[in-house]
Amino acid sequence: MTILVTGATGTIGSHMVNVLAEKGYRVKALTRNPHFAHFPEGVEAVKGDLMDAESLLSALEGVDAMYLLTSSDQLENDLNTGAEVVRMAEASGVNKVTLFTLYGEAQLRTPLKKSSMDWTFVQAVGFMSNILDDWREIIIKGDTVETFYGDKKTSMIHEKDISEVMVETLINDKHNHQFYTLTGPELISQIDCLKIIGEQIGKQIPVKEMTEKEARNHWRQKGFDEESIEFFVQMSVETPEVGLHVLPTVREILGKEGRTFEQWAEENKHYFLPEKDGNTNG
Image (cartoon, rainbow, N blue to C red):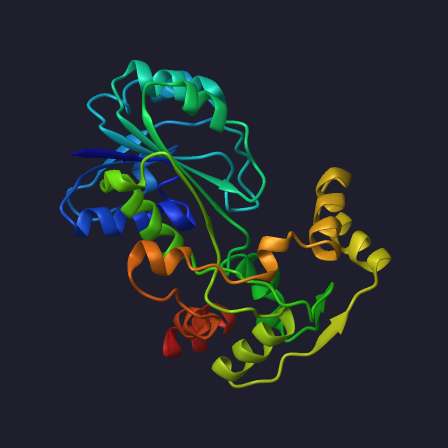
C-alpha cells in the first residue's frame, strides 16, 4: 500500500510520515522543496504544491491512499487546497482520502463525497503546538505573555495524537465515510499552560490579560488582516461548544488516552529555553 502524505514537513504530516514508515508502509512525502526535507530511510520525497494542482501529477502516480489537508497548521504558510486536487486524485486511481481540516472548514467535503473514492473527514479544535508560534520567543526573552480570555479552558490536542488518528483512518477501512472531531483529554486554559511551561523550564512566566482593543492591536502588529483578527476574537469570545468539552474520539480510535499538555510541555520544553540551555535540557 502506497500512501501520499501532503504537508509532509508540517507539524502533523511529519509525524504521520514517521509513523507510517515505522509500520512498514510505502510513503510518498509531498513537499515544495524535497532537497531540503529530511525523512526516514525508505520514504520517497516528492515535489508538489497543493496550491498548484498540476504539480501533483507525478506525486499521485501509484498512490493508493492520500492524506490531504486544506490549510496549513503553520501561520507563515499560505495554503488553500482546491477541489481540482480531489479530481486529480480520483483520476490517478487513488482509492482513499483522509481529509484534515481546521474546525468549521468544509470546502472539500462535497467534492470528496461525490467522488468514487472512500473518505474520512477529521477536524480538530486547537493544537498544542500553536503555543510555539504564539509564545516561544516571548518566553525565551523573559517578556510578559499577553493573553486574551486567558482563563478560558478549552480541549486543545497534541499534534502526535492527530497524526496517529490520521494514520489509523488511512490504513483501516472501518473508518471509511466517517466524520471525526478530535479534542485533547482535558480542559486547560492559557494560564494553566503557561504555569506548566514555567514549571518545566524552572521560571515563572509573567502574564498580562489584554482587553479586546489591545488584542486586536496586538494581532494587527503581528501582520494579520482584519478578517483573521475578527475570527480570532470570535473564537476567543464565543469558543465553539465542541472546544469546551472533552470528546472520547482519540481514545475510541487509538485505544489509548490522548496526551496531556503536561506531556507536551515536557517534550517541548527545550524550545522555550535559550539555545545553550535548550541544548542542555532538550
